[in-house]
Structure formats: structure tokens, C-alpha cells
Image (cartoon, rainbow, N blue to C red; front, side, top):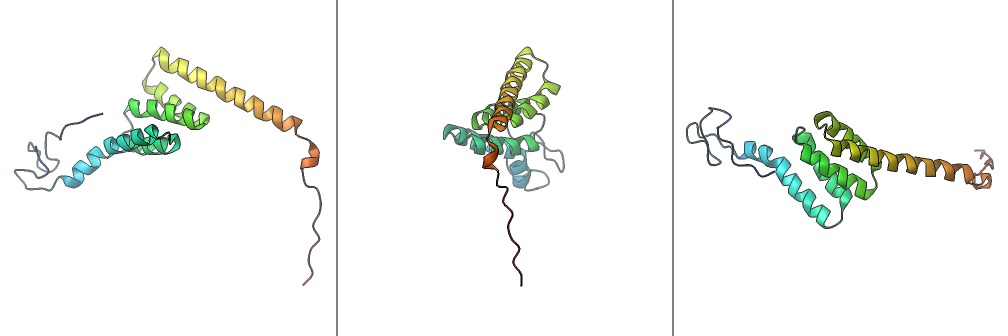
Length: 147
């Protein structure tokens, strides 16, 4: 995801190799901050991932994806982080977005794998709900206080 400085000033279209345009003297720092924000978020996500804070890593990657929605590598990493912190539904949603831009067999296989995990979790949840005793539900009625 490494990027070089933009080749041209967004104001006057002159080549700009620093944070100030040599022709129109426009301060490009804000522009560069926005331009590089996804890369900075990517680095923060990598640090969170290294600390095994997968939820925070996912959140940082989601912000980066919002700013750079065409970057499929961000989506791939979001899938990994979501699966690691237990957000299978989010991982599947990310894979669905990824599938629209990437028809590779790897993406399709990963989607099927995660969808199978999701279905198994859903099945386990339903089975647990069916076997839970009814006595756990509080059916007592509370008396209303008179004022």
C-alpha cells in the first residue's frame, strides 16, 4: 500500500514533490493527509493486529476502506480480522463486497468456508435455544405500587 507523493498539485496541476506547490504555493499538507489517511490507518491496523486486538484492527481497516473503497487488499484483511475476533457475519459481508470485484476461485472458496462456519454457529445457537429449560424464563408478575 506504499504510495509516493502525488505527481501534480490538485489546484494548478503543477508537479509537486513537496508539501508546498512550487507554482501556486498551495499548502498540500491537508491534501496529503487525506491522500495518505488510508495508509496511516492500515499501519495502525497492522499494529493492532500484532497486539492481537483484532476488533480494533478491523475498525481501522473499515475506516481505510471507507476512504479507499476500491482497494481489495483492505477488504481481504478485514475478512481475516473479522473472523479472528468472531465477527463471522462481518467477514461474510466483506467477502460479498470482495466477490463483486474479484472472481477468483480463492475468494469464492473463502466465502463458502466462512458461510459454512456461519451456518454451523447458527445451527448450534438454535439447538441451544431449543434445549434450554423453560424454568429459566421469569414468569412472575410484579405488583404495581400505589401512590
